[in-house]
Amino acid sequence: MGNCEEFKDDSVKDAPVRGFLHRANDPEADCLVLTHGAGANCQAPLLKALADTFCDSGMTVLRCDLPFRQARPHGPPMRGAGERDQEGLRAAVEAMRRKSAGRIYLGGHSYGGRQASMLAAAVPGLVERLLLLSYPLHPPKRLDQMRTAHLPSLQTPAMFVSGERDGFGSRAEMETALKLIPARTELLMIPGAGHELMTAKNRAELPGRVVEAFLTFSKG
Image (cartoon, rainbow, N blue to C red; front, side, top):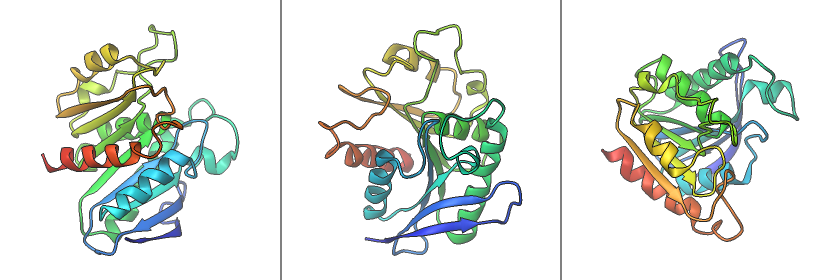
């Protein structure tokens, strides 16, 4: 089991990295950069639970705040924040490259996962795998606003985790969207869960299930 410590990196002037590093005991361990959704921060219970469980499995995890959240402690990202948030994720990945000899993965919940996937599509080879939690395929009941334009350019293998009751994308909609991606994908559906994924009923077993599935996916 590793330890958790506050993490700061100012190597990229306009995209400081702020968060918490769950450091595995093995200095050559693989590393996951994990970020939050539009209404949360890196202290979200889902991220903390996943980070602890991944670290217990032998992986280093950096859970970090996106630039919009660093600038605005409360509220959703302002229009146009996505580009800078992607810069922040890239800075976090580069910071972990300097610290870890293992493979680097990138992931996030909802908005954070979307920005991670857009970054990976724009910069092929930046990371080895993606973990996309509750990917916001479209706003609830707004099928005319599909967020799939970058998916045909995504060459990084990606595992998606979605709740069966998620209003941002049904199982059928997600399965259709994943067919746009040329890289290898996997969809893990969580029964009874909505967009938040972790519920009172599944909080004990969900982190372990996601971690086990992602570790298996990453071997492929």
